Length: 421
Image (cartoon, rainbow, N blue to C red; front, side, top):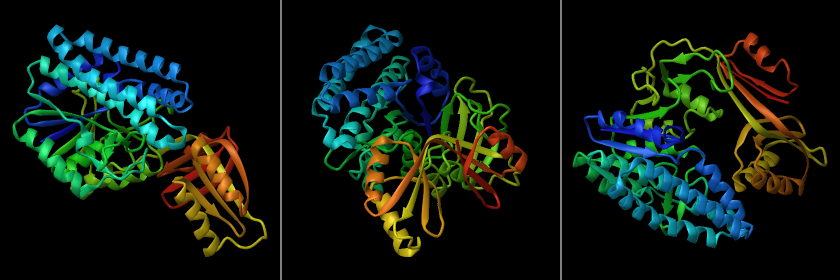
């Protein structure tokens, strides 16, 4: 049994979704499909969140209604009358939940409100795909993954309760797969034990696919993308990238940790722990060989592997009394970052200073600076980028940084990182 994960680009419009039918219908064994929100839906939902928490209800509902209509028009292009009516009915139930989430949005519970609204994108798109597959005589079941993946209440980055969720996965998805059915469900989302929606972190659909594959002991996971496989850098950012046919779990998890967008940082662990290979293939041309990520990729000589993270902030913390940044101060600083759930992308400390490179998120950076400023002097550099090069050579690094000012540099045997402006 296999897991197929389709991202937003693969269902960006009705034509794209229709083109997935041969990929899905040719699969001979039971198939679990994990689907993302279509196109730019998540971005649109985030705008609705901002309006809703600011009590700008007319604008929030206007944008919400536009999004509903877009999905209904999308479905109408794919489905014949009876199938469209059935799918529309299912979506209208979701629309009621959507409107209620907008109504209850509260700036004092931003992360909670965010998840109740943003989760709807995957529910809408999966409902349409389910209707389309059923119309084409495929035996298909739609499952609300919020009934399966039970999490804690860390909204926007929820942690899955593995034991409980595994039981739910087997009782719902596993049961349907044993009937030789195609199961369509959602990536990126889950729910607390109390039934409140959560999200698993941006790009969390890959993680959902991996988690369900591990819980259900699946044979493989395939992520269908608009690229021909795993490459040494994002081809949208860097010319002349190199396709890598096979790569190890260890190498990919390093790249994911540093911010490579092709695989979500948490995705590899459940696959590695259960020795499940992950294939990256191109939905634009299913005949292309793609890439495989597995335990042993053989004796591979990797090219320089490049990751660039823009929209970073370099935060420098200095002790006011010139005391050293030793264990006591480090423990205190780490606790502040941890309590505010701020991920550190790069860290370095000297005698009296501590430097961290973090994502530039207003909801995280402002509270962090306020907390740090109580006991430390804090300075920041905004609009910086973090460049990571695995298996680097100096010529590549010099070419990538030649028009930039380097603010910080770290180098190990295999990896070089620079914060630059």
